[in-house]
Length: 535
Image (cartoon, rainbow, N blue to C red; front, side, top):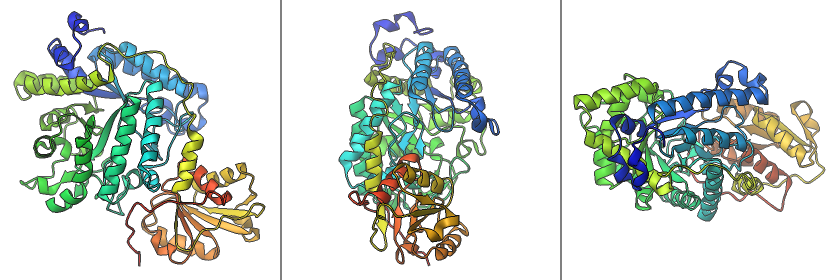
């Protein structure tokens, strides 16, 4: 444990360790940097497509070297893992990265990642990947949600990841939401809460710290906080009815962490200013801490996002977040500048040592529960990683939901035409061929015995709905597959069969292939959201 006071090995609790740390060490513990998503191969124009396996590996390891230096220099407390290539890193590569990082850390690192399922899954290639939250909710089976979280959690721990930024507790009530959508378990607060609790239980069983997000609720927004600053238009009564219950249930269940959202909750800002929740003491301290009784770790969403830095100095924004009630400062734009700003804020008295100690203690308390205070275990058993993928596909197939007339799987031997948007249509065609089906494309669609039309974009987006309806007119007997957000599909579902998969990640596509080829395993999903008829 380089850099930490020599007597730290003699103490065993978060509270005791805080008293042994210097100012620099305390600041380091509340900071979380990232590894992987700044890989030169991944961010270079065209670099990912033309890069070899060895190119990707070299780029990831080079980025790891950069982060190791940062961890050692600033004695950081956390690192968030991102894949260094579009289809993900192999388990052995992830394990190597986390082991290098842990060896560099003064105390066991919180190694975090986003592993929600569906399209938001940083661990993909070689791992068990489950469907989106909405897909899992469509099963109507909280036990399946718990078991999936437990499997994901065990695979995360196997490769050295101990902290997951999941489950999503947002209640998606806005069909135009561009960033949550199928990442939510649905539009019913009770159903969402049930799934959130099941996921927390699964992660806990696997020894992974869970984080509910994005407080105070990102489900009724029409702006992506990665790209702008969303505002929630709910009244206080509406917020308490829709958004509060899921977070309250998680808090009552003892969830390890709550992630703040970079979004404005206008009723909670009595002065009328558009302050994101991440920088709002009325939201994070008065509401979350005092009124709702949360005593655990508050994590900011990534502080490099537009919703976090818009109109702010990126170097001092983390200071504002700490003062508002954030304990772990996730991915500031510039770690050295953030360290300097935090030191200056403490030296000037703007941030009290008591507040810094409080945040540091909460970070260390999670590490204590995970058994990291004596240093993280190195060495990884990857034997069972990825072994659950066939089961994940079965769940994705069960979750497929039918709108409109009953669905009958085309019988074996019939030519099946697959047309529509890429890459989803092409991926589905290849998945069907792997299951022994003869598949044609758009050019031969009229010779086919049956046809499916695949759309993975938002049907409510400008012009998309009319275009899809026009194309469907060309294939009057086609089944429409909506491999993405379900909103808008209801306008077509009254006239023809629609299959909803709640995502177009590989597991969803494979689940659709099962539904289209195996009449003994028909789609059985229950719609988790309220659809509003489109004129």
